[in-house]
Image (cartoon, rainbow, N blue to C red):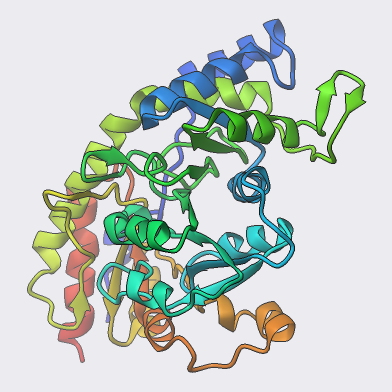
Length: 374
């Protein structure tokens, strides 16, 4: 079964934007500004801090670098344990290793896909220094409980907001709640710099200054270095593109919410599909991804791809199940049952601001058709 060739669609999973205004901004930066650490970088940092609601923002070359440098700027020790989600992109944990600490994993809530504060609590030891919640898919974590947990145990909170540009929790933007927030501008994100890029946000001036030094080779002055730093700077042309995209972020996020709302409506009567959580008075998600949980996920994925629908699996295994983490730390399957179950069922459907109602309807019709054949 399937559609005839004339009705076949080609709906991508995502659709990064690069238009004439962004091209003009990049060309101007190339022609009139320094290629690295130019004026566009400074302006982008100021504007992003203002948007998130923090005093400072420090750009980096990636979201992974942002997490690593944030931990270093906060004084992570060699014996540090950092509690984070078992279910995320591997970079959330890799950054901890890069910073010299050890990631400790906690299981997630099957509905929100986010780490559970209660599971974090059980992992705290005398060597725990940080909590690193991940606002997965653009849905904010339960930050009130996480912040209370941190305060009760004298821990620092670093928000992995790499997928949560513009998301809000109880009136605060993601990335402005913990002592530090970290963002990625990879091309698949809600806003990008048309390449790799990242940002650290904080209200702590000392942390911001140290992070800025760490990302720039540890410079005290041009050729004087008083700490060992990294080459983790954001290119100026990328920052110029980021400034254009930042101006559009709220409008784009609003359209993503509208897309998600239509998916919710059209899939609510499919018993084999669990739709992602909606926002409420406390939580305003931005749907970096629209992730369903589906019985017979792999068969549904193949069916949708056969019918021209781009889908993805974010992510096919929890971080502790990654071969490198099993080898380094001896993790075994079964330690994080909810994360493992979700990894077998999660399926990302197309979502981006320009996705048409007709295309959304087509995707949902194909999902209904798949289950009607079973």
